[in-house]
Image (tube, rainbow, N blue to C red):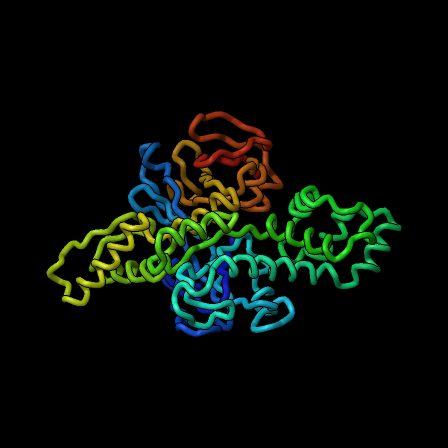
Length: 396
């Protein structure tokens, strides 16, 4: 699963990316600091079954911290987007191309209103972040429309003559963007365009493209630099987005993680508080900085960064966590590791689909599955539930 970190320049995208992954990237307060996309691994939290099942896990792909499983997701931090990026302005073509395989987007917005549409610094509160949300959504929709537009008239005519469905025509053009037939069908049901694609006018093309954007690249809002905005502004922005919107302090999260790494504090991502084990180790400047970090964390019940990642995975993409094991009695893999792997899969995934996710041969040779908790044998159409521990039985 890949989550794209998007937004105009100079809003804190790279700081958000760094704070989520602790990767080293260039961060500066000027537009287009990010030129090439940065990739890194972050984590979303799940409840490890080892506590409930009375065993001790031996994780392989997802670490366990005191019963909390840290499940990896890939993050992509791309170059900032400016108005008319779909026409190649700024680094628009590169930005949009980098987003082809993203499953969901976190739009980082400067909630303090201290950067204009181009990403240039302006006095705090003089720019309305609602404009940023609207323009970025439009740019992505226009990018999709631009791909559909290329040779549309000829293709639409041929498709209509051959009786080919509109869904297939669109899918052939957008398959490289990670757009599925399900995304397209959902968009068409929403827009209900004319059945004959030759009759689609520019407005119809845009509405279809925008609906595809919403279904194929679902987006939430990180109201970043929230510590520099008042509560009334944050409430107004959250109500104006039409999306999930979470107040975020990426700089605070990054500082907390670095302090924890230096063992100055005890903090886990997503916690609503932190502790200082030995305040005598801190100098006056560190004490003042940590007091400010504490103020931000208490104000927002966290920094919002981990909450954004989990909202993208669990709410936007509706993922669940499952734990495949080879031996249902000992809950181990073939190397004897207990509950070794945690998989994120879409809600509605079946046991056989999970088998394919684990290994193609396992799916092809699927016989049945076993629900480890209930000890029941289930078929290939069993719909997985969150936190299921599943054994796949296949032909050897």
